[in-house]
Image (cartoon, rainbow, N blue to C red; front, side):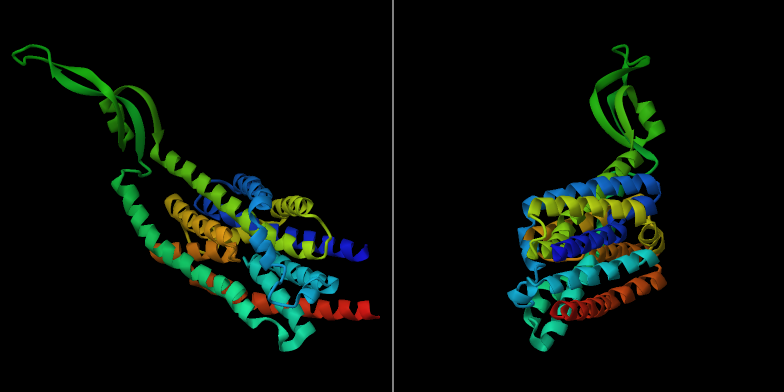
Length: 375
């Protein structure tokens, strides 16, 4: 019973730390581009991440299997209570420390490092290096590079498409009957105006007002872009909840601390709480410090990240939402020439250090717990 309580507490701790470090990343572009203030963006992230976390119950069996350590360490060790507790606590310590200092790191990377560290203390060189490389490290290393590349390609293409469509800040999208000049006599003397059938017009608001009589509907183009931006941010937060929740739940299930339904519900609620109470420092970093951005640029970054994370969830690939979302922001910053390289270098260094810090922390905790258990 004591071990179950320890593992349950550790699982909820890593869920809280994950919420503090990761929840805001899905809406960072809303806050960074000025589309929404901090509070509105935070609540949108909370609601949509919670929905994604709960949806993980239906889609997450493959990720749960991967993050139970299968293939990385022997099943007997992966199911041992000291190993499970050490992995969760080591990852939680690393992620919470990063959240306190405002550095966006990967919970996925932290859990991987913690499993490697605990496994190394227990087995030495007997851990499954092939599994580590193929199932963990390659997706983690490749995903941010893909995000940068896709953002670099998508930004100019989509920006050009928006300009061709006339969707600029100054324009509106209106529906109405266009006023056209007509002759009032057979000889053509005198002119009047008549209404045509319904038309959709994209132009400056003054032009729309002149050309459309009896307008029945219209929206400012910037408002339309903002609405789609909100939708893309919500999609990204949903995808993050869908992808990250199973990773946190997985190890707790190994130790039979909770059944799947209760585990996902508790983790989802505590992740939401962590975001609401402790996300501010990481929010400032990912929203304001990586690059300056316009709403359309933030929208493109969110589309890139959402696509990659949802694709990864579908195929059970343990990509890092943090690294994908930051990679997309790096790509946008490079494309618009406003990347802040000192901040990017700091984040990259933190990513390099995440695995060894989590590994050392988890290894030490495993050693202590093993000695206590043996004693």
